[in-house]
Amino acid sequence: MSETIARKPLADHIVEIEVDPEWADDLPAAHDVLERHFGTPVYGSGLTPSDRPDELRAALLASCERLSGVVRTLTEVLRTDSVVVVPRTHLAGLDVEDRGVMLYSLALGLGYPTGTDPRHSQVVWPVTARARNGDYFATYSELDSEAAYHTDAQYYPDPERYFLLYAVRAARCGGGESLLRANAHILEFMGATAQGRRAMKVLQALDVPFRIPSVYTDSGKAEERVYTFAPILGEHNTLRWRKDTVEKGLAERPEYDHPALREAIGILETALREAPQEVRTTLGDDSLVLVDNHRAVHARTAFRDHGRHLLRIRFHDTRHVR
Image (cartoon, rainbow, N blue to C red; front, side, top):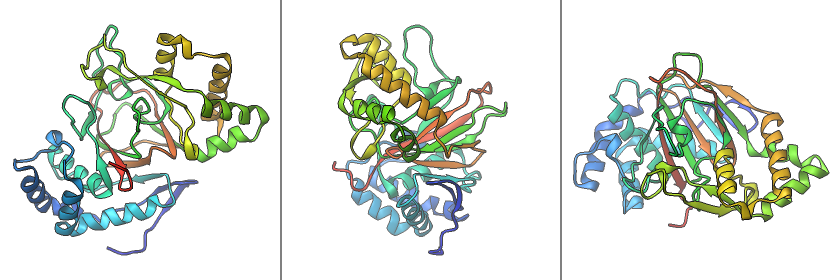
């Protein structure tokens, strides 16, 4: 694979690139490595984190030359950019389970994939509209309504550095558009005024109760209420944000509520709406977006087509202390 990477800038820190169209040819080798490692036949939806990820990564990259090239490309792009859009991954000729195998292998090449829920540790997570009724606290991946700007896994103590979203089938209704923006522009927007700078200090200083959505609790049931307590603005200007997890947390743990916090949240929400350099894109079938979850926020418009089907994988980077 050429060492020259053709980047198409979509905004500052957000780029579109092409990948090797033949990397899916590494599927048999990836299957072989994974099956020898796990000691069982593998399929995408059944993959869980490895207890020896460094060993498995080395074996995959040694056996899968084209996969290794895609990993090198994405690693290089992520040194400077926060979001990478791949309009065509060339996985469409595979069945969904095998696409999951290749995406798992890609994520492992880039870092440490994590299990989405604590009960099954499923790494390749289906994003489809399937929310339940009642007090069940649904996450955005279970809903068809608008998903306002947020970061992934903000309700966990140690949110993953990266996540990827792959479109098996895009919504056919015209909805489900992705919105992307680098944190740098949000914080520059806030830092341009004295009021915004004060808000940033508040968001750095005060712990907030982030309510964990029901599907990600130990029981997966509505009655379990669990929180992560952390500042919205962390070290190195890392954002931890999702409005509904914060609102539910503050409603249920009002001792953490504070007028200065509410004012700061309002200023943050203005910045999320009005900061420059927003990218709006619809992930078409067989496309992928890879996001640095510590340096960018994302959102999604509402959709009506419940045939929309995405796959998501979250993963820590290779510098993560395990």
